[in-house]
Length: 134
Image (cartoon, rainbow, N blue to C red; front, side, top):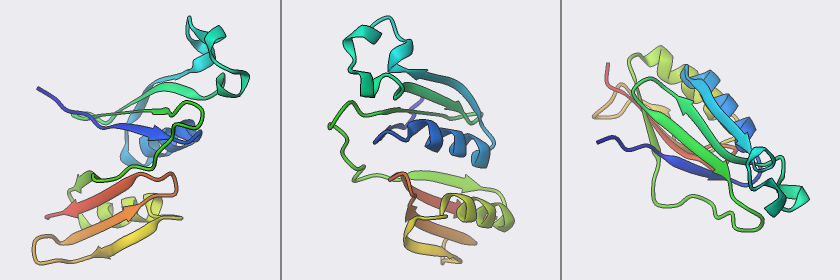
């Protein structure tokens, strides 16, 4: 069994998923708009260029997402997407890239369990944790 996060965005899914693929070394495998689906005529004009489904392959993990329709977006709550990296340098690089414009709950720092740990909500509203045990 595999579990994969499915993130909802408020109209900025394309930008967020493109950044996540770049920063996390993944590949965008799908990025489909409402207007590109067989049901395109059923969506209002302002929704046509919004993402109905995106998929970023990160190797052993798939990160999926879409723009919430119309006014149905709700900020994520009660979870974080955890990233475990293999070096302090990688933790610092990822934190700098994803943490730009973020609301930081805990800045990247050494803890009693990790060489580096951080908690933040990025500029797109996605809550993240970074762990580096090396």
